[in-house]
Length: 219
Image (cartoon, rainbow, N blue to C red; front, side, top):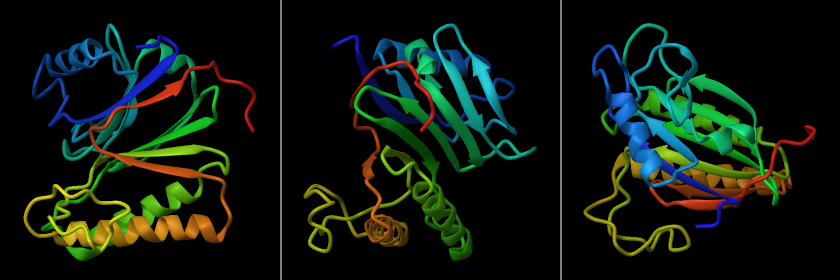
């Protein structure tokens, strides 16, 4: 792999809280380092509050609930990615945003951990409302990468969204699948209406590559 590229990934880690599982954080970071991941979205971190942590190989940004060790999202940055970090924002225990400078464009990465399918509708709608606002506030020339755990099944019928869905889904689409598709589609329509020059990339465990460059003066 070209050393001037960023490798981006995502992992539902099922906790990196050192109080409940000592050593789990370092184990996760070693695995990311093994696969040479530069920017890793993390969900279900179960860390409280928000802030940063450091391991031997990664700088971790995290956002969680104030006291309860539930949900939580984070982003692990290699030393190269940290140098390109422009800013970051802990939105809540389910959404975290960070912005990076690359040679092609500024890159905004949003990590999410959606409510599960059996969560009450109001909580699901609140999640997508906040997420929609975060995406809409991205700088107009940024490339936006949205990664995380949407807790959804899209099913095997891709006919209702052939441009987005593949042909290898399983079973029936879940309520979260329908809800997620509708909200994400509306996000894209909103971007078009307000004429944002912005590219939205959706992925779960797919790895993406971006050219690295140090941060420059803010737009």
